[in-house]
Length: 234
Image (cartoon, rainbow, N blue to C red; front, side, top):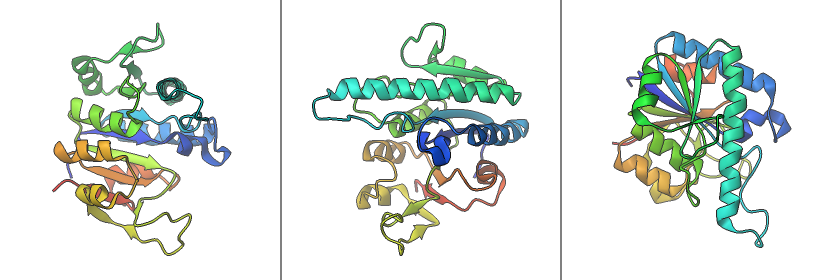
């Protein structure tokens, strides 16, 4: 698979490491080191980060869904500001783009500007989701990958691929080496939400899902040695 421009999706939980909340600095530094290796090879990298290390949606039925989703959007902005700064410490130049104004902390998303940054070898973080409630960061990931014309989505999670059932519950769960995205939709596997799966399927956007905690897992997804699940759009 050709990989000149990728979009890397990082789960918030994976960045938290064993702490399960907030940031595990060693994990984020390792991610920065791996992305630096990829960028040094001439591959363009953009990034979306989930917010699950800070916020997982409504905490009670008394809370309005729109307000809960807005908190989630801000959680992704916090994640991108922190991770972006760790990337800069690793020698990378970064930009954070959002679909809404955040003062001087981010800049408003502009496709042409984002692609210009990428072509200059700079890493672009897409924070704030889609800017609208009821859409997950999975949907934002697929949408941004399509908009910036990425070749593939690399999805680094706390779990190492797609299974036919939850491996935390079922020790005999079967892991898929590859599958068609239509299977995720038909079987409702839940590894990404259905809205984003359908969007990827309609726009033929392939994905590679793998565990972030594996040694050099991001680099291997690009250069060889990938052990996760390849989601095809045939």
